[in-house]
Length: 441
Image 1 (cartoon, rainbow, N blue to C red):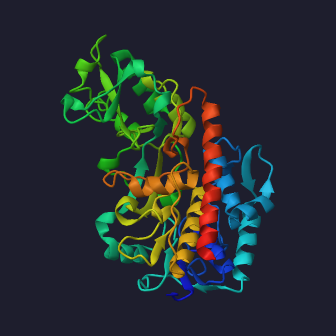
Image 2 (tube, rainbow, N blue to C red):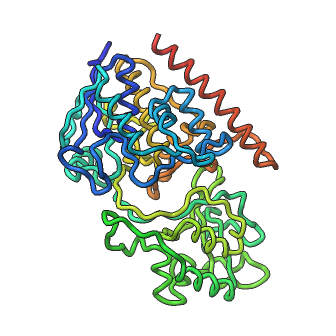
Image 3 (cartoon, rainbow, N blue to C red):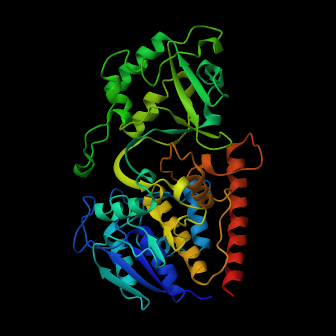
């Protein structure tokens, strides 16, 4: 049975515009709600759609980078915003950098002039939960609106987060200075423990407390909560504060034969196969280059490949593992899809990709067709699979990186592995397109 061929989309950011254009291009009427002309978030400065707030870079176009792989996937899926970005490109090596004002102006004009899109200037505070809807408000959405979401899906399924810890590729860790174990051998071997002697610890702390931090925007400044204390702030409380906190060495000494560890950094698996790990308790506001420099002083991490650096935010997002299925559809409300950073994806291109994915599945939902998921050996599929299958008790947003993309073969050569993963991605995206076209016939 054909459902009402009209969709409400809340938010005209990157994800919302991508969803809106896809649906409108498939003859679906779209009501696109945007509050900018009435009320801006603290991060917004113009009335234009698809505003790039913090950077003019949409990351690398190198095919063997995760971001490059994601762009190639989006190209094959005829991504609207990626095409707009290319038309507004400015030279910056292998990065896709754009003239931000030109880009947002182009997107705004196309969206506003599309015959199937009705732009509504309104501060949406409540959703009509009975109608096909895509939530794409971004991470700084209206407080009343977010409260409406919390009331429907449960306030314990929504987060306001301040700081997140770095994620590292497991195969880049020096295992001669690390071991898998739980404290006091309770349970399995869930943590990778990187140990330091006293001299190494002292040198590490000295560099940490003097490292340079990111200067927060006005809208990001907030009181630091004890449960999410940046590691550099904690270190400034005293030389031993980390040894009594996230770097305590207790319950693990017997696993090191050469000497008794003076301090230990624990890394927790980020995915089922353990190919990426999170630095437990190492949420931070250090500059990225400082994170690389200082955290690489931990002996086991001397050659660490950082898949995601730590950051501090004042953003809101849902607990995707509890609330979303692998079609980006709310489990409790199948007529509602969630796109962009409020769903738990991190980054500009990732938000665009999420918007396109939601648009595709909303189209299938409206026509009562089978919804489509992407396998985790594609970059977009890996991102969606990660956010809906992560540990719901420790969920944090994720961007595109090789640590979450599945690979069914082992390689000694990293470039060969990346090429193989790109080839697999290309095949899977082609199969996805065939299935999509088949459902729409």
